[in-house]
Length: 297
Image 1 (cartoon, rainbow, N blue to C red):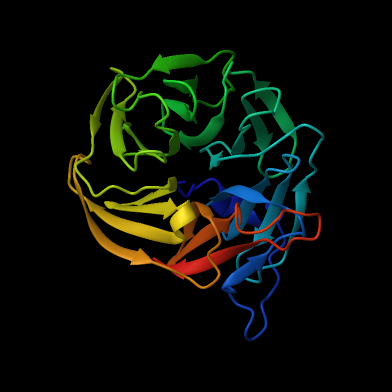
Image 2: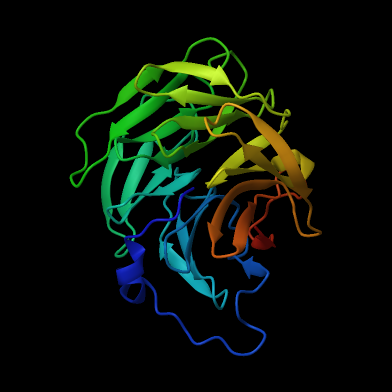
C-alpha cells in the first residue's frame, strides 16, 4: 500500500480528527468492532486508516491519532473485502477475495459512495496496487494479473495479463503487491516465499534474488525498503532492495506479542500498521476481538 497525497486537503471533511489527550496519541493497538475479521488496510496521506472485513465486505475507518473509528461503509451479505488500495483520485479499491460476486468494488473514500463494481472473472482476487497507468490485482488461484486503467474517470473494462512461468506457477499463491516508482509490480507468493518483479507492459517477470519469505502476505514499499507480512510466522520482514528492485537482503524481522496472523501493512509517519486476521489462532465468532498493531518503521 502506498500513501496518497489527495487526502491531505480533504482529511477534515473525510473524518473529524479529535484532539488526542495525553496517552492517546497514536495508540499501539487500534481495536476494531468485535467479530470484524480484518484482511486489507490502507492509509492515505493523512492519519486515516481504512480496514476491510472478510465477514461482509464492510469498511471501517479510524483516526490514527486517537485510535477511534466507526464503520464507514456497511457490509452486505455475500461480500468479503480483501486487499485495499487508495488511488490519486480519492477512490478506494477493494478486492473481493472469493465470493464477492464480482472482482473489485470501488468507493469514494470521502463519502463512502459505491462508484462501480468490476466482475473480473477471477477465482480469488487478493490484493491491489496503483500506478499512474493502472490498478493491478492479483488472483491467487490463476496465472493472471488484472489491470484496470487508472485515470480521472473510472475505466469501462479490464485486462487479464498472463503471467509467465515462475510467477505464474500453479499453487504458488500470488498474494500481496506493490508498485515500484517506474511502474513495475512486486508480488510475493505465499506458497513458495518467492518475490517477483513483474513488468505489466511486457508481461515479463524475474524472481527477485532475496531470502525466501514463506507465508508472505501483504507488502509495503517505502523507498527501497520492502516490508513483508509473514502471516503464519507472526512477523514482519524488512528487506533492503537494490536500485533495480531485482535483489534484496534481509534487514530485520519484527515480532510483536499482539501479532496474530498478520496479513497486510500500511504506513504513516514513522509507523507501520499491521492488520491481524487471527486466522487459525481463534475460532471466529461475532464477539471475537480484532485489532491493528502499530510497529516502528
